[in-house]
Image 1 (cartoon, rainbow, N blue to C red):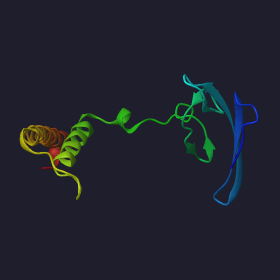
Image 2: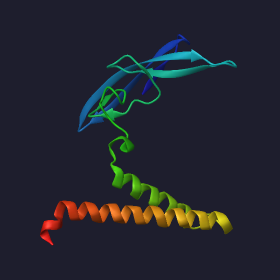
Image 3: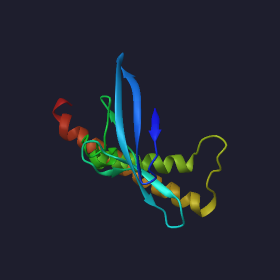
Image 4: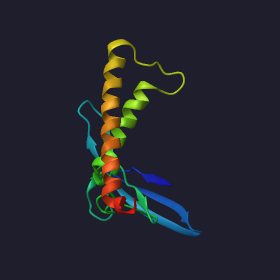
Length: 139
């Protein structure tokens, strides 16, 4: 990997890597924006769309923006059951954290426990209704 920042307003990043034994080289342009209290902030320029980006994920050995590669966030493709399960899981991790982390106490613990029971119950009800709707004829 090599970075060319001769001009402070713009530059380039050259990435050399192997993908399945085949050497690849990709050059990505950089642009910078002056910061409010001095200095500059650098951004990648998406090779496909020309948009300014902070992150360029690699798919199939090509670095490009999330939009150019048609990638979505997990939350964009989750349904109601996934959201209920995720909420119950987040509350469970707050109630019973990993070893060494403090557990909530008092009213906060009671509030979280009530919220977790509601979320877990809603998830179980939705899941069982979905199972019966899809595979109920087998029972």
